[in-house]
Image (cartoon, rainbow, N blue to C red; front, side):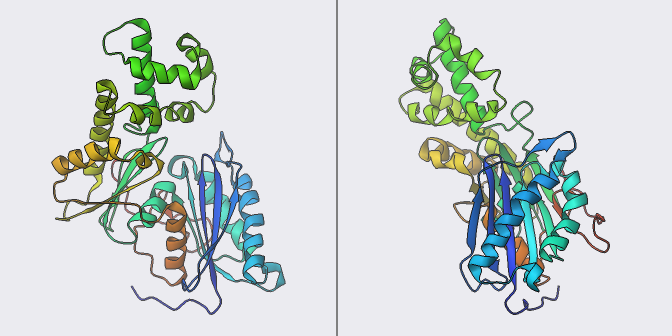
Length: 350
């Protein structure tokens, strides 16, 4: 692939849209300066048609214009065209992003002059932030859990199916398992944990009132995940909490093993997301499980986050150097007429 230099003075925009809000970053296309960032605390709405494209655009445009002003760049309506490329990473993009793919590229071109947009699943921007543009795998874990890998030909996905069908080992899964163990102790059933029951009382109040607090909530996964740190805090002194975290580690390692590039003798497996801030109570058993399932893997933590990944994708687009596999729902880059979705290799396992 032949790259081309970024236009002088050109900028790129990266967007990370998740369950707690939206972040926008403006950086130089040539990465010659630190990016500027803005935060929108309101999450983008979803409805019967999927992610609300108009609501996402209403969040992005004011933030982008504010960042361009802060950077001293002219706004598009003032003869700009300064934004060479833009990448949006959004939770739910793979399954709920139909309207975004149909509506957003044209709208971004009209409003900001962007001719090179990319719309990605948040797991893809997590991959780009943590791994870059090489082969490997990423496990992105917070409230939920998804693993994504590529050999730069196809994407392989494991889990990320939500708290009712999967997300095994994620924050909601750990929190639910901890609360179940607490309720077992409350009832006097086998497998209960008095330590976790004590933490349930401290966090939520009387155990018998928990169903009434939990079941009506629209944000049940987040409420369940809020108890995961309590499980980690009990680990080491409580066998039930230890078992929960070891089982979570096994689920996460299974997902990582499923997406590692098969022909890579020493694949990178990057761990990213808020769940891993639990530290050793989860990371120690996870590293042990990964050593069993993918013994040659290079396990890394930290690295860039999904917003960093969105900027990296935008910069690669700006110079014709996008090496990550394009895909109609995982990493959609319009080609030809705006809104046309190019053929691409399908993502395996999802």
